[in-house]
Length: 433
Ligand SMILES: C[S@@+](CC[C@H](N)C(=O)[O-])C[C@H]1O[C@@H](n2cnc3c(N)ncnc32)[C@H](O)[C@@H]1O
Image (cartoon, rainbow, N blue to C red; front, side, top):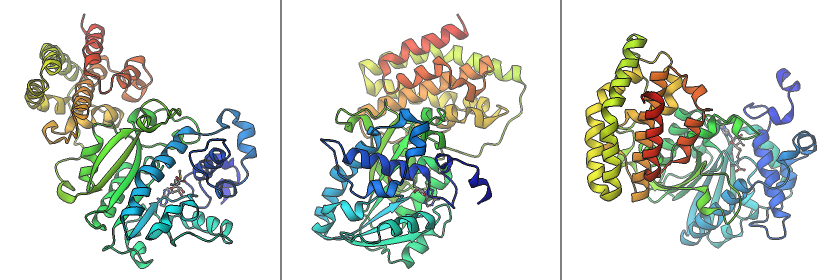
């Protein structure tokens, strides 16, 4: 407890001996939403659960008010996912992993429509705090609280001991959770959930894009550990046992301000067919030692030689996506060994991980559910190649690079093949012309 005594309450998020401040802040924002004249939902328990936030807001006046992202996410889950789920299942389990101070078990009237059990999983300190505050309240359905650390693989056994049934359809809800965990932990949790589920079980997860993890700003984002680009998300989740569709929160924002394509709503159904298969986004890489000058020359030669073909691919994709895609796949196949050599030869592989992780995957195995997703995948992949070449040739550190305008602009062109060509020409101009 010693170190905690010297911390402000809002600095506490990953200590197991305090209720995480992010969980309280989310509850606070739900309480604020509930007080609006036209609230998207009313959570009458949120204010009590959030506790006294005066000290925080007296130092962080800018964070007062409502938080549209939290509101839109909760509303989306309630109306788009849980209402239909509760109506169409005579009996089900709704498992909230990292349940925090969520009060659906007490406020979500649709739970009464059939026979549902809510299972809330969180650290014991969170569960005890919540149980104490809500001890006089009556849940609307069967409610089970499981105190477990999701990083510990035994959490599924604890869930089963508490009454979770592998034979009953389950809706898994990971609302505001996965980006606070290490990516490998998040992946194992998703896999374990899929493996413990019936075929028709579903999932909701929100993830952030990689760019948001470098912000390290504000009460939430400063804890973000990893992110996914939208076009990479289906493969990542397929690898974890879920067939998903993805949409930026902006698509569901109802005119609220949820940021700019930084957070993604992922919804899916259990599908083990690709679990643990070809994909490994975050492969352990064996470093390869080559001299810095050799690496720079490799990158320069590669970039110079592929630029004309990439220009051709983009133009052809705009006219005829099928033909453009074939040319794209052929090019990646040809250059993959060189790309791999360049990446492995970096002294600090982690520093370029956020740029190059996707380049290790075979694009022909990437699942695209729509033409938009395919376009986003191709734009993302070609941009990643160009950025890796840029960092390699210029000798720029990958982490420092994320604050440059060149990197920031790459986030703006995501999914837009028409904007890719001018962007790549700009990189070419800075490198060669
Ligand atoms: C930001 S809060 C979100 C809470 C809730 N889903 C909501 O929307 O109100 C994240 C929650 O995940 C929980 N959490 C984080 N890591 C966890 C772990 N390893 N095991 C169990 N719970 C964890 C935290 O204790 C916290 O309550």
